[in-house]
Image (cartoon, rainbow, N blue to C red; front, side):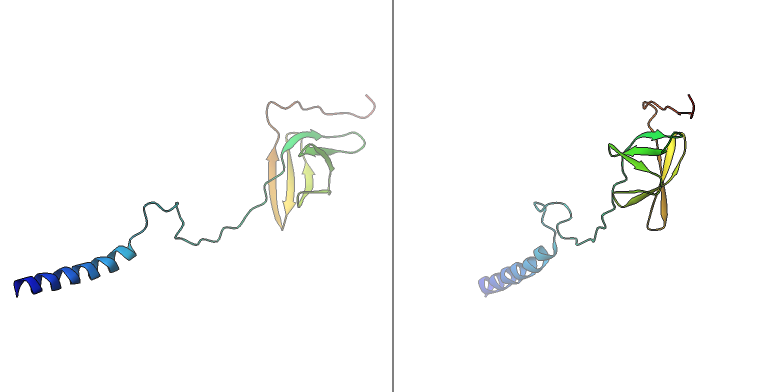
Length: 112
């Protein structure tokens, strides 16, 4: 009688532990493998290398390429130029990109 009671209790504990174990997370699984999160990719802003103010065609060097005002690059439109930053527009939002302090800035004046 005691043996059968022990076997019944052992069987119940195994069944209960199986249900409990399935609700635990796997410690060997990669991080966030059980969570399904939707991530929206945001386009990276172009890299600003130089700003050309004045001259025949003002513009900026973005991603190693000359871009004039109102031209597009990587889905962004160059909307404004300033001496030390530019403003890009995309989907109704504006993004200000500053020129690195280590970059050389040169303002050209017509007639010189």
